Image: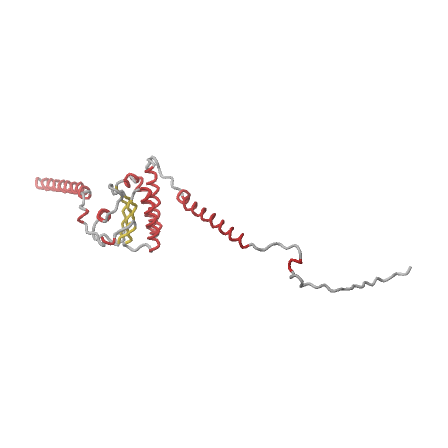
Length: 261
């Protein structure tokens, strides 16, 4: 009997030790995961080729799309003094995606001003993972869970459909909207939610189209007016060469039958 009780006590003790060990492991993992990684030690592939606001290492965009997106991001940077960057990667050389993207950002000279202000969206195709990162003033503009969720949900839904260019354009538009609101002193948040309707996003394009349409209409009207050289004629003589018409004498005899009374 004592042997059985001793055996049960030993099993309970072993179980308690095992639970304690697992608890320690679970508490340690977050600490290890949050440990600061030496970004300088990460070897970035094709480092010399990485530049500009769009680095398409995974080849997801056409050359025309890269040019259009780069121009769009450059305009945002110039207006709001904050780098807005898109990275597409084939893989991350075995590194954690977030750490690898941060290494690219820091090692390749990205970031606006002394604070290296920036908002980055990166996709790694091998890992099927994406990252939305902010630095400096980018963190002020997209400063909380609301901003991250708002932007990422709208971008990743397009990524899932394979609409890469549309996804990155959406990221650019939303980054611009968040930066604009932050510069005005009211960053978007749960207390100040974004009201980005389709019309508000499309309004700049509609205005540009309207202006272009009016200019084109004016040009066409001027050209059309210059082509109208015909003048209305009211006399048949206007269509005849002088001296070309010779009227010869002509006699018309009309016979009227007489009725006798």
